[in-house]
Length: 186
Image (cartoon, rainbow, N blue to C red; front, side):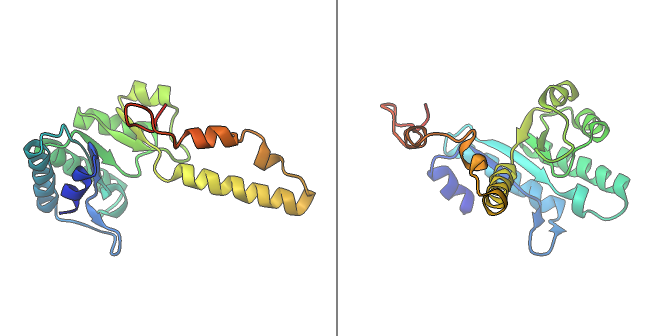
């Protein structure tokens, strides 16, 4: 089982998704509830205080209009909460009103992902959001920087995008140095 291998590698948290990327179809809710329960049992068996962040893509892939998809996302997140998840992650939730309604409906830790239009952290805290995922945004930001740097070199022949705000060689190497406690973090 993939989760067992992930736990054996030292993970203490996991995101579990409820749709197939290839087909963009949601898994049956009963299947996901059983997956959450099985992962919870596995964490307990291994003595790992595992954090399960149960994601639903119902806002994007459920049947019906926006209201129906929201209702399905709440239904699924509630089932995952009740099955033993520690946090629920309604993918695609970005506007204040929807976030507030979702948090109110779940009365449980809710995760949102950084994307254009997402309120600032202080507002998310006010709305009751418990966790914010970066998702792929750091990769997109880095690629955007490379795009701007390439454009600058081609159009102006300068390198400011590559040098302003960059970390130093020593800072980069320090990120990979192991500390006495065995971690690579400083």
